[in-house]
Image (cartoon, rainbow, N blue to C red; front, side, top):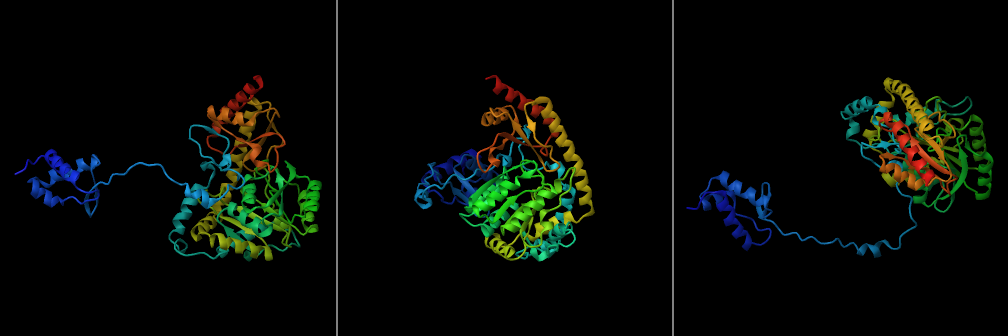
Length: 471
C-alpha cells in the first residue's frame, strides 16, 4: 500500500511524466486512487499541485495531460515583405482626437462628447425595446430601414422653402457611421486621381477618406465665416473639380458657420460648374445659439449630397448615419455601400430611430444647448485668464470645439508634449489642414469629461506657452 499523502503521489507522477511524451494522457483519477490507495480528494490535490507547477494541464471532460514544452522564439514575419511590396506613401495617422487617455488627465482633445451629454436613459431603453423585436434577428434592406430613411428625409425636407421639393425616403442611404460614407461618396462621385475641393482647415477624417480613395485634395481658404467664394470659384475653374466637401454649420475644427448669402453663392457655383456639394452636417444636434438649416434643403436638383451622423449625438455605440442624394448619384453611392458593407445592422437603425422619435429627445436637445453653452463659456473664460496670448477668432454658435490661434513662434509639437507631461491633453491644429498650416492652432474640445478641470487645463497650457517664450 502506498503512502496516501498528496506529496507521495506528486513525486510518483513526476517520475511517470519524465518518461512520458508531451501530450500523453495521465491515468484517470479512478486509476490513481487504486494505484496509490489514496482517497479521490488526495488525488485531486496532487493533480492541482502538478497543474500549478506547470507539469500537466487539464482538459475538462477529457482528462489530464503531460504539458507540452513551449519554446519562446521570435516571430518571423519576414515573408510579408515580398507579399506586401514597397511601402505606399505615408497615410494620415489616426487623429489625436481619437486617442484614449487615462481618467486622471485634463482631456481637451477629444472628438466625442462626454457621456453625461448623451441621452443615456433613452438609449438604454431603446436597446431593451428593440431587443424584443424582429430587428434583433433579421437583415435590413441595403439602403436602410424604410422608417429611418423617412426620418432622415423628413429632417431635410422639413426645412425646405416654398418651391423646393423635399427629398423622398428613397433618396436616403443609411451607413454605419459617417466615415465609411465619406470614403464611398468620394469614390463614387470623384474617383481616384481626380480633384476634390475642400475647406482649409477641414475635418481630418475627410482628408483621411480622400487619401484612402486616392482623391486629389484641393484646399480652399476658409475661416469662421466659411470659404472665400472668389477662391472657391477660381478653384472650380482651374481644376475642373466636380465636387466640394464642406461643413456649412459649426465646422470641425473652426466652428465656422455660413451665412444664408454664402449658402446661396456656393449653391450657385455648384450649379454653374455642374458640381456636387458634399454637405457634412455632423453637428446638426449641437446648436447652442443657432439652429441648423441644411444647405440640402435649398436644393432639389441633386447638387447637394447631404450627410448627417447620429453617432456623436445619440451614442458612440450607435454608429448610424444617413446620406441624402438624388438621381444617379444616389444609385452609385448605394452600389458602393453594398459592395463594402452590404447593409447596416437593423437593430442599430431601430435603436437610433427609437431614440430620435421619442418626445424626450427634444427635451434632451434643449438641455444639451445649455450644457454646451456653459462648457464653452467656461473654457473661453479660462483661456482669457490663463492664456492671454491665445486668440479665438469667433465664438462658435454650436459644435463642440474652440479653434484657438497661438503666437506664430509657438513650437506646437513641444507644447503638446509638455502639456501631456503635466497631465493636460491637447490637439495641435496641423492635422486639420490639407496643405501647410497658416498658423499655430489648437483645437480644444469643450464637450469632454470633467469641465470643472478646464481652468486647470488652461493654466497648464498658459504656463507651458510662457515657458517657451522664456527660452
